[in-house]
Length: 270
Figure (cartoon, rainbow, N blue to C red):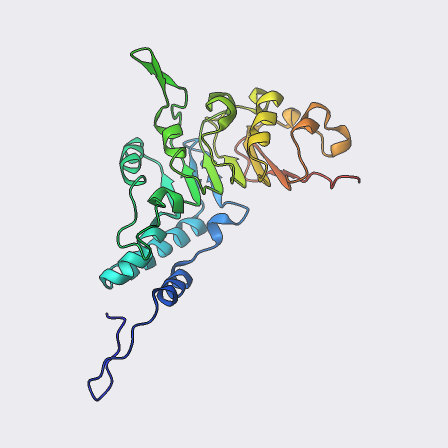
């Protein structure tokens, strides 16, 4: 399909400006669900592994199919829309980490502006890292500390807004969790391989919130009823130190119960 149109006299009409095609393709491929709370990620009671709900899985597949159809139309559409393929990434197999570490640092093919240096990783808005017991600690090789694959991946995602992660307590994150984008708005632990709420140190949470002031939603790992924090800000105690005004929802998932508790902090001054 060409962006040029031929009339009956055989004359070729002017091309649409690239910006117009970009707006059209953005509208066609846009799916807001991944960035809207709740995340539509559920814990699987049989495997203890995070998983997309049936509705979310269907929407995710439909979105990918549409994007693949769009980028397959012609070279120009591929150049415009190939970056949209990376907006929502689901990783549930370890080998996928290695592939993405090689792919995301690349520049999109056929950029409208040759001076645009944004890599494919820049366009990732949501990441579902659903690998149980994923290694997060730094490892040492030849006396030099390096990041494991997951933290390395985060360094490639400067625009990340939504993160669903399996089995990765904050204490495992690199110091200050600075490898995760400061633009992050939503953070959820998804399964029973994650630590309990008792393992989440207030100091670590405070440091995380300091480095990520835009977080509005936090979903904690499965917890027992007696581990939940109080229901109001007035009795939060140590938890009050990290709950800033920007946090709108704290979701606490009790074990593998399909129901869960949402704790919504009171506005400041109430």
